[in-house]
Length: 365
Image (cartoon, rainbow, N blue to C red; front, side, top):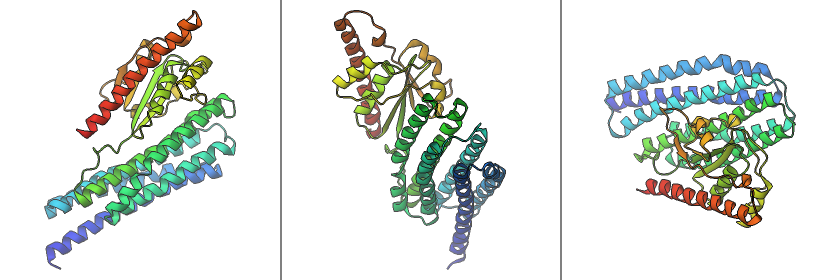
């Protein structure tokens, strides 16, 4: 092998080995959190926190190796894509380490260990996410674009499971099965595992680019998170969430919350049933308990007061004001109330349809 190719391979192998080492530590941290949850063992959580500095140190080492590689080898084409992807993947893995540390700290915040049920559900999402992260890193080390493509398909299932578990935890709190002080740490654990799946997907996208030159990030693979907010999360926002889910668009996740949540209005449930949309299992949520609010792509205020949840600039979140009347607060004859529901429903259906089509159309163009 010519000297240049020999040194090129040596340097690339060194970077891959360091990335593998760092990913191994991040995976160990994730498993440490899972073990702490299963065994109700705070010592495991402390171990995860104490070992995070090693991941941070490896991130710096890999950055230096990549920069030295670029300066020394002057890479082009495929080898340049390798260097670029390595730097990006290094950052994604470091973020996973941060998520593990955050989970460990929230485990320590639990005032008491709830019954086994919540932990079993958290273990379920963890057992989906950790192998996904493993495969994402393996696709980089082995330069396997097909493995990367298969692995990133798991993200939608993780998103759906996260949404389901979060709803169950909020319902358990409403039924006083878990204390209020435990709700936020438990929701954070679920959310951090879901965010780890997002980082694994990002790794897969970088691997596809590195291996094929195909830049996969802007081809509609992302999931758009849309949150509807009003005062009570009892009627308007629940109707909007129901309409959104009824569109059956796999690239969208619709949620709702309220500033001061009340139970879902029975009249709203009955009205939506007439439209063929079942919201009978919906539960009201407080905006304060919406995990990772900053990661929603779109926040829609359905009442003027709900605008207070819009994130301040600079932000990538799109904030929309769709203020509309609350039919559950209308007093009058049954016909007048029915008309109020129809007007709100049609307003929300029309705006949602236009929003979804605009996003999907923008992806195509």
